[in-house]
Length: 497
Image 1 (spheres, rainbow, N blue to C red):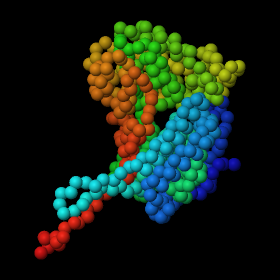
Image 2 (image 1 turned 45 degrees about the vertical axis):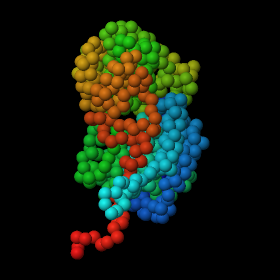
Image 3 (image 1 turned 60 degrees about the horizontal axis):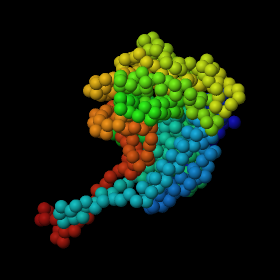
Image 4 (image 1 turned 180 degrees about the vertical axis):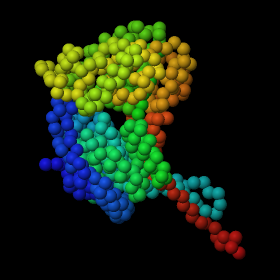
């Protein structure tokens, strides 16, 4: 029997096609969820709009919303291990990584609880016989559309600031990973979020996503996903004059200079591309290495990559689990074949584990053939203009490109339609500052990679998206600014006399 979904405060079967959650490590079925339909979107939005008008939510003071978000955070922490294992089953990430993502989600709700408690409105300088001020109202019913690669963290980064702002939220998780989002809906209910304020509608993006974006009562869309889908959302939003935030794709450069600490840089590069099995928008998939250290660095990089522990996501020592699905692996294999056709040489990887002699870190036999596993893959011999180097693969595939001249390096690093992230490895702080300012990227890591703070804004440039999430100002993305003028003149306005 299909699991119900949360529609406007009621748990019931969606009227769309069933969504099947499959464990990528062995292909077994986790659950079947009754997916949403366009009619369910209409119902959820109508109930959300009505719930926002109820005094229980409309008149709730910011500090009380803050307390509510703190309760959500605590409930996530209380259920941390169950949630981590649920996400592991849903998308195949190793248990160590899913625990970190659950902790991140709890921290996000806690942070925005504090923001709601402390965010201030402003009295602006007077320029006449009046007092003027700037206040903030919730923007309305918000659509949050999240991806399959890090569901609970992505869900929290949209849901928490929207609730802190006083909005209602329709959360649409990816159809292949619906389970954690549904549990988050249950947690919001248990924390005391009024009925109708949160709905969770898993379903096909072309149906549910489109219905949300075009719905006249959806006031804002927050989307994380592919660039082409983001373009479509932007076009539809333009027709409504609706604000959006779009966190899209990436093909991020990682740059290693001749003065870098080799062991730090090797570990950072490996973490940046092969953690999460490369299924990350910020993956450092283009590696520029100064020619003076190219051979030494490449040798150290390959030697450490082949030691990565690939296997059972439930094993505590696993570093790489399976890809999210067999079909996604097939797409990556096509890119690897393309890289070979373009003249690239594979230094390691380029195959499934059963062909590569890898050992399951949990010990004993492990049927790699039953899951969607793929080896960490390193290419050399390709130019920056190769398709495999330019197009987002969203998998564990790295291309090494040598450089000598700094100006040429900057030109190559910026020669991409994307602008999401960058990593710099150098001991020269002046050089790091200079390049960080010139590289087209929303986030630049210096002598580290893939570290985050909910307090620091995040977003991309160019085809990597528009708008920013996180940080204190993240709550303002879900509010409308309004100006008030209080007349203080003792005599009537003179113009009418």
